Image 1 (cartoon, rainbow, N blue to C red):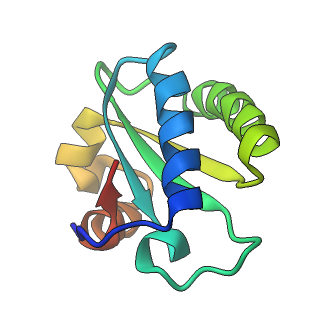
Image 2 (cartoon, rainbow, N blue to C red; image 1 turned 90 degrees about the vertical axis):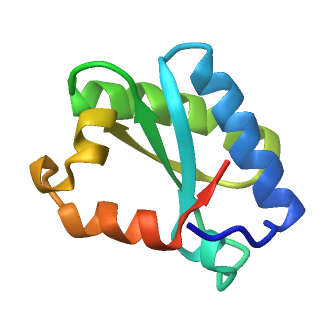
Length: 114
């Protein structure tokens, strides 16, 4: 994982999202990935955030929708669209069980822990 600093707006939006998500979910950690993590984003780029969750893999669609509702509130507050990706810890530690193992490998390689 990378450790370079985030731009202040992305940092604020990602942490605001994470704070709200932690109030509703059992979060292990969150990782920013994609263009905002690489630093090659444009002003309208979303902030991709993988949210690692404890417990058995659950209902992906309903979890993503709940997190997207939180992300919408953050968008209204910050102007940055956070795009959540819920991932259960069992999937993270065994990426071959995930529907897109390469995505998890990419997140592990280029992501920034929040």
